[in-house]
Image (cartoon, rainbow, N blue to C red; front, side, top):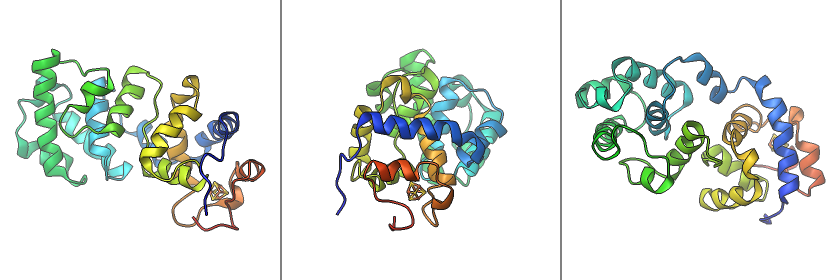
Length: 228
Ligand code: SF4
């Protein structure tokens, strides 16, 4: 049985610091596509890309965002685009019809209620159509530089594996406590890259894992002796 709360803050920071040095080498999709697709990085495009990314692979998300932002990259431009055109541009992201709907509705709200500016706080972001806690935190971190960590499926899985939390909700709360504010920016990308490139769902590359020994010294059982 897994024990939760297994790692202390200083131990988790040690793990993060090792991964921070290593992750640029891995060329994980999370980092690679962010560099490859050039489109304006504004609070609005970050919000729309984050919305497109849910339940969708990175390569599909970035390509769809690129096509969409060639048509419209501001809420002013987006409200003049038809639902059908948005759908075509973002296909085949998951739930593309519903997401096209959200994009139009939230663009209108951002224009009418916020004078064209994406709100910079969790509560107001989460009131926008289609925006949950993960998307809101991505926007806060990447658009506004606020210290927070968006928890996706990779991060929730790692937290479970390392005995930190049993599900995504608890992981969200635990990471807030375990990661000091100055380390929160970039934490999502580091952990997602690790989950995509090394600690993969199928066949984790434990033989080249840079934190295997460290985890074991903290009492975390993982690696070849343990199934994820
Ligand atoms: S040792 Fe293996 S299972 Fe443990 S974190 Fe590294 S890659 Fe994942």
